[in-house]
Image (cartoon, rainbow, N blue to C red):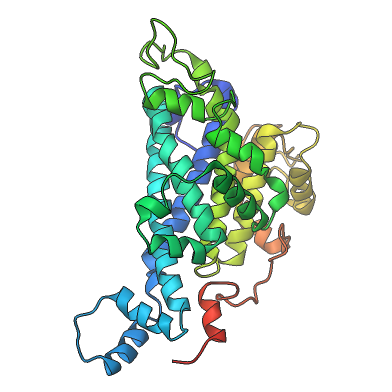
Amino acid sequence: MKNYISYLPFENIKNIPSKHISSYEYIFFLHDQCAKLLIEYGSSNIDEVGLDELIEAYSINFKNNDFDIVEVLQFFKEKSIDAPYFHFLYSKILLGLTGDLLNFIYESLKCFEKRKFSVAYSLLRKPLKENLTFICWLFNNYENFIEKFEQETDKTLNKIHESTIKSIILETINKLPLPELFDAELLYNMIFSKQHLFGLEIPCQRSTHLITSHGSHLKTGKMFINSIFDNPNETGQYQPLYISLPYIMLFTSHVIFEAFNKIIRLNNKTHQHFTLTSIASYENLYSDARKRPLTKWCGKAIKEFLKCIYCNKTINLTKENSLRMFMTDKLICNHCHTHLDFPFYWLLAQTKISITSTNSDDDSAWKDTILARMFKSTEI
Ligand SMILES: [Zn+2]
């Protein structure tokens, strides 16, 4: 089937219009990369690293065993050993926000598979407008976020002004390894603007409320109620999703990866592989087939391996084949049409090519993390 990359089982994409299938698979691919990362960090108990030593040191001062962990961490924070406090809260909040965001996005995507558009769009609203903003804020300035979190959050973390959200997005982009990939204004419009026709705010609002009145594109007219008369066979309803969500998810996944990197550094090969495949796949979906500079660059680096093991002819990295290679570690020979396993991740690791300037296997696991500030503070 045209545009089907086989990242997802065919059963999952059979209702998606052919021209959108590869974009849909790409969104799921990004979701899954983040979910794997979340599981890895979540199961490592990294948020509790060093706590035993602190509790022991605290118990020497206070014989009372009736204390909670935040109390212990606050005690050390007051003595200028604040890194464990920030590390613990940052990790807990990030894991929680990311898990919640991914749960909502997953369920939304499953609803898009079934053409339940109204439910699907309404499920996108909270994770993208709220969870993503908080994740960006936490990543961008965790001390400021935690200061607000320590107060009454219904006042400090509620009804965030448009200008604050815009500057949070902009500052976050500037802290990513490849800031030139993202445009803050465009991202804001795609998620929040009531004027942006192919953004998500208009369909998300219409799906959440039966009647809407703000903005010329959102006003519900006479003899009408939002969404209830929509035809599930009207494939135009997928349009805002495939124009905006891949770009938003590319941004979201890069922020999540960098945010987790602040807890403890990711394996460099995994980090490089994710960065490269996420951007190169996007390039194959949304840029001119003749250009695709990143794909061409990869093609050159692994040129000698791009040969069919059956007919011995050179395999061309067409858009579909490139997506297959980046997302599934597979290729289809353009000549004899054989399906081939192609270990792109392994090859990438062998070639030692790097897409960001942070490529070094020698870096400490704690470099630039929150706990790294502890090495500069007072000994316990
Ligand atoms: Zn062949």
